[in-house]
Image (cartoon, rainbow, N blue to C red):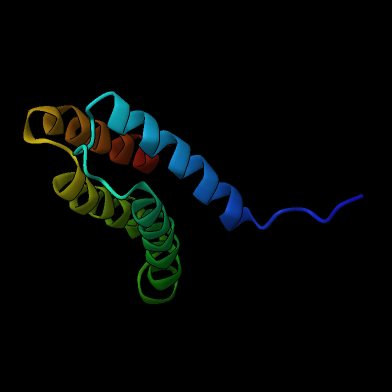
Length: 99
């Protein structure tokens, strides 16, 4: 049987597909370099988790991930669509703290 794919490869493929859909739905700027953003997103997520695990209590992770999403959303999402996504980030942060 063939070897399993590396999880990061799967994450990159998943992120690329979701980002392409977001561009088509006008949820991202039309000139977004989807491959570059997918790579940056996976790197940002993994880096946030790895660095946070060594420098801060685990309870700080939801806040750091929310900060990551705020940076990404402000750079990628057109202004009229940002409120929806920023609200979702806040909701997910609250749920991850309580769940």
